[in-house]
Figure 1 (cartoon, helix red, strand yellow):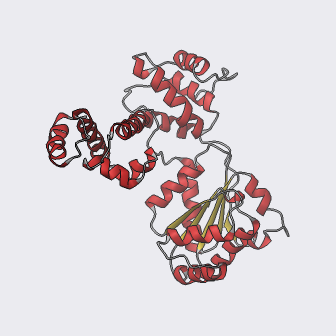
Figure 2: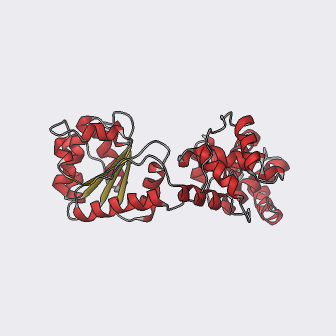
Figure 3: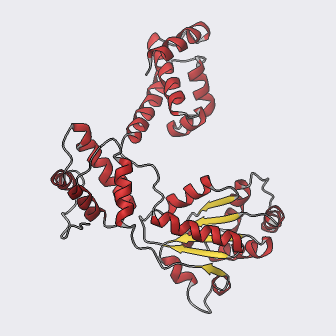
Length: 333
């Protein structure tokens, strides 16, 4: 942590702080505050990460904790150490590739037409990440991340809270409030892992759309298709309202994969073509495999150890660190 920040924090803490604080405790407080400032994170975020009550964390960092704060400070610093490593682990900034562009067309068109859209894709292609990024970048978007067998009441609670609206008691009152707030607006409801909703919750969602006249996009795996696609099936009324339904996305494109690698390893001036080929072969079109397994391992056991990046190095890391079998065929451009 920066020396100026520590020097700035220590005098004030020493003047008003609890006598239970040692000089080392004051320094740790300064380290925590400095980290939060540098990384633009709130104290409430840290309290949640560290599983500490917000009040306790506030007392610890303000120097007012009546007992020794050493245990809590060590806990906080341990969390921040993990977060620092996570920031360095090679997880890339979001790449708006072909999957993003297709999904955005579906969402934007569905919002305009005020009907249903359906997006299906294999696990790992980035559907959930798209939903989060789209909501952050697009005003008037409600994102519902579905829990298993989500009930109508839970669904409507999430929607109302997403609107920063009071949540009334009773299904009918919740439904009426959603209709009142959403009707005449340009909102889009984006439902991630929609195949996990209960059938009744799906029906409530359809009626919310019908009454409020807004767009709804259902996002899920190929299992979502088996629920909605059959003619005269349980969800025929939703099926008849679908305006856009691209075919199931099986993989990200090779160009997407290369862009993810280059964005993640931006400090590497030149990436060998055979390394890109090898990463593509191992990830098999899965953005999740690439960003959560292959690239962090390449960074930890390659870049941070000063090794020259190559296909052979990736094969060695995949075998000894990730316990992956070597792909039979290595895709090339």
